[in-house]
Length: 281
Ligand SMILES: [Fe+2]
Image (cartoon, rainbow, N blue to C red; front, side, top):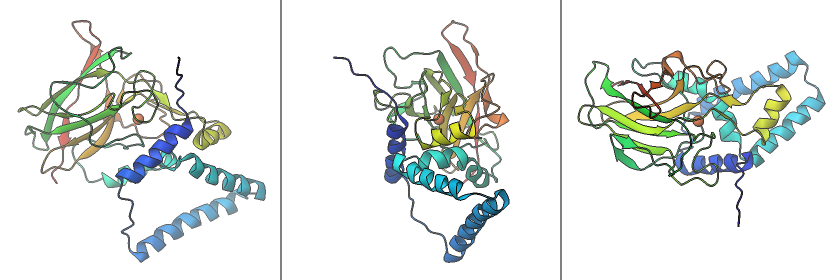
């Protein structure tokens, strides 16, 4: 019997919605004054757009139908993380002097298997792609090593799919929490991820098609770096030469976050070093 797995927007969108409900503290803790101020500004921005662009009833109804469909597809996490989170991240990490942050995105899963460095990420026996040795140091702002710091890493496979969101992948494929050694060094063996399009068969895809945009994110590693006494940083690293480094649909690329891997001397794929610097808590 052949089972064909088809990754659909509805499936990965619904998964992202489910995960968000499970993992996030979505309870509002803002004051009434703050809620009023933010809601008023958002509503005003929408009204200003309607007035300035002379939005018609047809367009208004199309918007209404589309907003309803985004919810039914479970794509609100996708929509917000692709088009809004980068600004929230910018505000949240403005104060930092260490490693730059980037968006978490909708495909993070906490509590991945813990491995000591040097580590090989969980992957299938026949995992496709170019092997990548990803390594470096984790220090504080003064350059002091942080032994036992942890590197949570998750990324797409060679087809652009994430475990636990696309069907048919082992639960923790290409996801782990790697503990740095006594010198604050980490060494991770993985497979280079592929660029991917955000799901195009749901409401976000409809918007992209209707607007004539593209749906691509450049290939990237997702990371959360932490150590006791330091602020956790959520970030992403990209690859030099990727055709979408300059026009990421999620606007999440920063020049400081671009890797330039080189071929390994032993011919087994590529390698790259990246040092993380943590800000004090
Ligand atoms: Fe991603």
